[in-house]
Figure 1: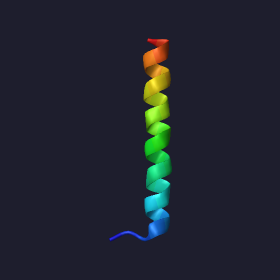
Figure 2 (figure 1 turned 90 degrees about the horizontal axis):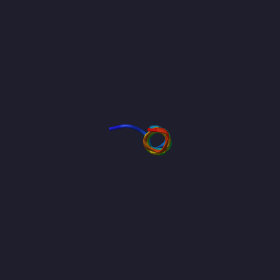
Figure 3 (figure 1 turned 45 degrees about the vertical axis):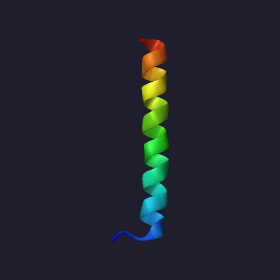
Figure 4 (figure 1 turned 30 degrees about the vertical axis):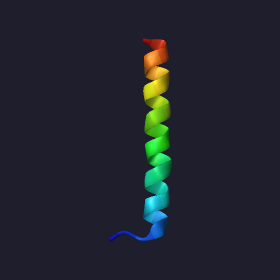
Length: 28
């Protein structure tokens, strides 16, 4: 199991990936 800090970073990374996908779709 990972500490909560890692989980928090994971959520931020997930949000960043979602934002990248949205920008990619808009650009496409």
